[in-house]
Image (tube, rainbow, N blue to C red; front, side, top):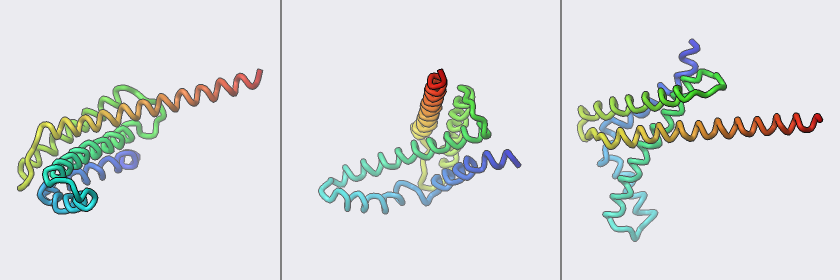
Length: 157
């Protein structure tokens, strides 16, 4: 039961990512929503610029989806423990890369979708970036805690 408690967010988010890999989220379908919004925001932009921006938004979506997944996987690996380990971060990145590759393979069989190695690289970069941010945050908390302890010890003297 504890396993489910720590891993359910990552599993739910992986399911959400899988939904984004369906035919409902092809570039053609998302352009029907995103391009009019971009045109409304930037009425003087050329069609080519709007199409390029749509492409960038979709790739940022890849990065963000897997950034979040990586943090949720780290949460599952940590299972409530306060310490951090490089092996945990590397395991999270490996799981993200594996899921990204599996997701792209799945897209091979979805009409309107095309698997792309560069998407796996973007996804993995998002996962790796999340681990760097998590490590920097853990380091910042550690430094902050140490300073608070030093200030507390210095005030007792």
